[in-house]
Image (cartoon, rainbow, N blue to C red; front, side, top):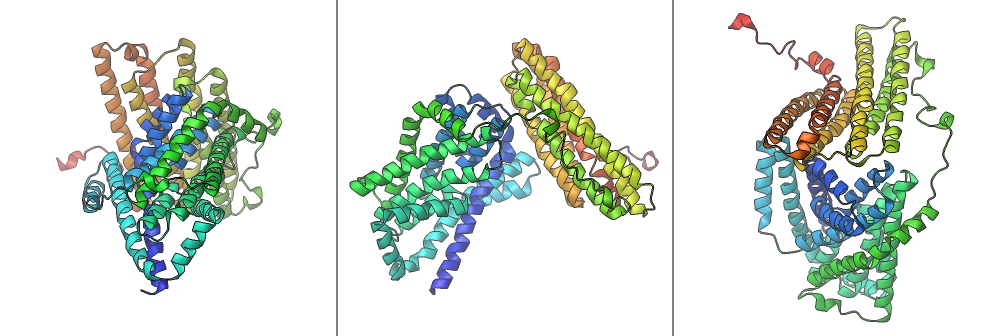
Length: 557
């Protein structure tokens, strides 16, 4: 086979592997996002539990980077301490290594099973969670299939002269192999995919262990670089977690590389085959990293605070939420088409502010203190100001002649601004009040009730994204999906209400204690979701996909 054809097949198999890892991760996040956030909250009880929680989450998500992004989001909202986040990421690194260990077994017989079962679940069932589980199963099947394709694509390279000579060079120059492993992992944004590829090459005999080990060490460093790169725009509190984790990884990786330079560690003894030995080395490296680094988490927290000090507190007049640059361009207000685009951009920003308020609600309801609650409530003033500015801007624009389509769009934007403002009020005046009441009285939700509320909250956050996408795209299929999600939200709210009543009847103390609070939180989340869905109604009305009334037409009885 010609070299270009080999490289093309290898590139295709690599992209399939990356896509498969993404499928598993996105399926898990969509199906069990609330449970994952609950697991993250439970992991805040000591560094050992945090590391164990990080390991479990990385196994479920098949990605330590996904765990890092969740942890950084919590830290940015003041919910997660940096030291706990560091312990969480150390555990996530080990979890990611265990994922590689499982996927490196010979599971080729599972490929048709996963593709068939995953395809049926994803395509033939209507339930959202069932479809997402199908996505995850398909992803596992594609991972296993891509590894087989990578092996087939690289088989012709065994007889060539180029790859053996390159492998021989890397086996002599550990530092180059190390840097290549780090760079490649950062480029593909997946340490799991990178290490599986190296293990596959080692199993094919294309890369000797002497070159594969520094490649894996470099991939471990590259895995830390991914989270560091993705969080570079976050607040310093959030950035400290991936920076600290990167420092831990770098110290361990360079120390292991130095040992390789001076001695010959018996890596081959870790398995019967080179690929098995390499993956076992990767797992042992990360297990040792957890054990060696956990005692120094507090010291690393202090170091990262020096490297990334908190930004100086700004006076209220300099608060970006209060003194922002508006998207409302008054120079185009006499041109309706441009003015509507300007108002849409400002409305998108307003929706993002509402998301910033909604996202930390469950953490504040569980462990929030009054200062944390007050910081989120303060955002409501920016939401109210955006609402007022948009209404006045569109009212002034309406004084000039417009087409019927432009006038209709102006009304739609005004209505959605009113609904977003109402959603912000529900958070500020209802949900956050409940969070303060819980903090004052030290109430605890039942584990079952809390899990149900987390599911509702995760659904609302996802629907915020979908609603803002519909606002910009005006896409009828997306609008239809948003309305279908409202039906799902109604079913979820009804289900949690019924379950809550059954818990009250059984005399569960936590449910009795938080009965009114549980019902109010569920009602508030359901109302926010209903307000978001209103952006879809005009689109579906125009496309003929929305009935004028849900009532049965009595003339046809």
